[in-house]
Length: 231
Ligand SMILES: N[C@@H](CCC(=O)N[C@@H](CS)C(=O)NCC(=O)O)C(=O)O
Image (cartoon, rainbow, N blue to C red; front, side):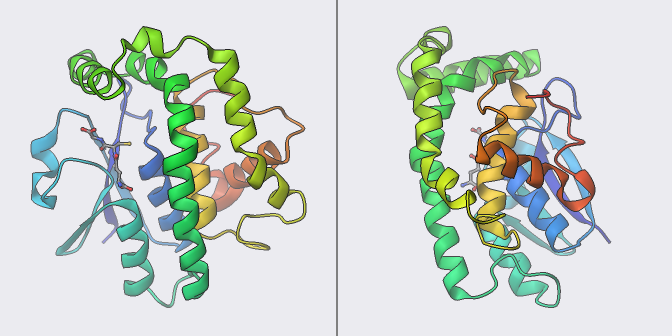
């Protein structure tokens, strides 16, 4: 029986843009586990109420359900130890945890204002008021104002990629020769942008762009086949 994944969708049900759900899509493909994705929308809290919280990703594996992308990655490695590892050892896991916090605490706040309005425009009409209200309350600004100063923010984003750029100048993946969940984490963030916005975040000669192309082509081109923008 395939694992079920509640996966954030836009107005078009096949536009799947959650960075956290992308982590899990990549992790499941890495572990060669079959998945059935279920489109989920921001206001459909009751559909995932069984998980005890209101955010995706949520997976259902037989009788068990797990939420939170980090917890899901750990669950998959613990439950399917004979499949390719997301964390090859405890040190790899510890480093991936650093990458998770770098992604969420440093990269996301820079990317969010660049993408917020694009996300809003791709939602179903009935989900738009919820997101407008939630995100404007969180940022203290109208969504339209958040998207101003794009050029400065783009520069900041590219600067924030420096550690990744340096690492990827001498190795194929963040985890070295092969990708692991650390790669899925950062890829998920870039795939969020690619699925929702025509903004060209990366120049083609940037090692980060080259790595992202490599990630897009993994697992039979899972990422590259996603509905998104050719950026
Ligand atoms: N820490 C969670 C974050 C999950 C999360 O923030 N998901 C967003 C979609 S990208 C969500 O479901 N938001 C629902 C809401 O804000 O109401 C994880 O790693 O899975």
